[in-house]
Image (cartoon, rainbow, N blue to C red; front, side):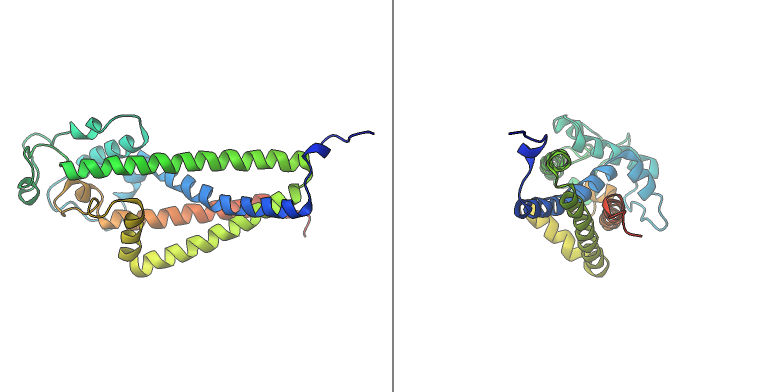
Length: 245
């Protein structure tokens, strides 16, 4: 009996539909995390700090100082350094933590207090986990794509991508609407999901808030939404049925 090449990789229509839905569910996760990773680069703070009406630091950081220290903070989140990468930083000569924050510190020349360092360590762990999920998602989509090509279920795979693009657009539309209407609620919910209670709240005079005020995070949520939506639309265009006129 002759075995046609690829027969061993073929699956029934039922399992094709299941795998197509798996693709659809993976796509939004990959696209959103890809958008997050894209923003975790120096160019984003360069752009964000220069947007119209972005609030100045009320405690005295200049734009140049903000850019310097924010880029170091972002670098820490994506490199392999330990917390001393941030813990060894000091305020510029002649500066120290504002009085309100200083009263809780043994050394007020340190750029970050212990609570801030603990939170940044927690954030780094979350980022690492998210990037592992992103890598796993990309590899899984690629593997399923190869299987779909060789196993004769490319059409189902393609539809899974298109549906995933639509799900991404729907998810982002809901999140963006929520951000515009009630950003504080979604910001608190996000932190309650990923961080231990009481470890992510800081004083306005603490360095993390001075570098990354609420406006920064609101704009970042919206930027992730815009980029994710663009990627979702691109997925729909690339995997759409080109036979339709």
